[in-house]
View (cartoon, rainbow, N blue to C red):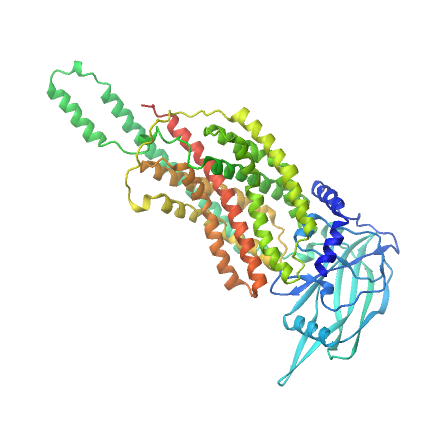
Length: 611
């Protein structure tokens, strides 16, 4: 019944949802109203969700518990964005009559006759520490359903029946809301329980721009361990960049000197040698100074050979380029616009940016596929367009069945799914096609410094630690080490009751992660090429992308040792979303590593004379 009502509500407003979602992303302060009120004007109290305190994602409609509504039935506005719908926000009017600056004494707004079913529902919620969330003028308010009192072996369940709202205002704007739960009433089947509320208004010196400061936790996010992790990562960058520069320049200089000397010895004509003895001397000199041929130069005829499965490879790179752009813009907009203050804004912005930046995906993926000699460019465009959306959609549909089974508010309405599908088919795909056409025509010509041999060179045997799989697994260790502290803060803000607002830290960590990923991938690629293995494209992509493996493994540690989550619902949601997050991070970092490695490979082979 709850899901059906939500679907009907969203279906009536699907066009409004799209328009509001787009305008919501274009303006940092867009909302359903202007946050200004006239004296006596209607102030809406929205009831959102209720659920276990330790399972933040397991939320249900507030009125899924047998709470009753107030007498007021008509309100002046309704608002929902696509981001709110995807996040399980279910705003329902409380029915309470609240007017700006108009105090209200204690009023009984409804009563219920406690049946056995209602008693069981309330006691279950109290046993599982259910909390509920409300909104007044976009300011969140939390309250607890009830509490347990133990008397010997008996347990008595009490519910809070009186809500006392203390609302602070500055001029004509609401800047503060506090809730006090009172009226502790014992739950007894067959009795009548009355619910009441009270509203007090007071002037406040808090400026409107700072009204969300009370919800932030600077002691948690700006703790010295956070600063220390940033400093530690920054020192890792300096050390790693210096180490890579020193090792590679020194090694490559030796290699170049060695190959140059070999070329000079080869250029000595035998006609200028007096005897066979001198020829033998030269040969011995070459063997002593140069030894047998080996190293990265030996694969110059195969290093620019197209990788296996070029359609999938170029599609992943195109998707990664788009994710990099979306992530950077989202972080910058969040720094400028304080998106943490508005429900679903960051998710709505990400969806809007992903749709409108699809030409980036098509351009990068299409250009790369063309340079690799691909001919099925339409197939590549379709794969690149739908690769990431299909992965997300498949995972979301699976966990959506779980949410529907539990009648949870996290169940995404069918019409919202249709809206997202239409965005992918009628916005993402065409824009991706435009980008692919531009990429093929502007950057699709292969311009490699070395000629590619017709017959692939056999890959020699090498030691076990030089195998691609080992290099791939080792490639993600340093990048993960540079961000794992920040990952803890991100996890805590998403899975617990912390509001993430330090996007400046996130931007700095993102830059550090990019630098560390590039340096680590270059080192791994050089080791692979030095072992005369020219399969560097997939190796560099997977080496940098292996950070997702370590993030996902860390999510297991976080679940079992840092949270008190329980139940099939929360466990399914947690590990499914963590898999999506880890895979998206793998694509993003893998693309960064491949781009950096491509520049490095082209640089070193541009100075090698093709044989």
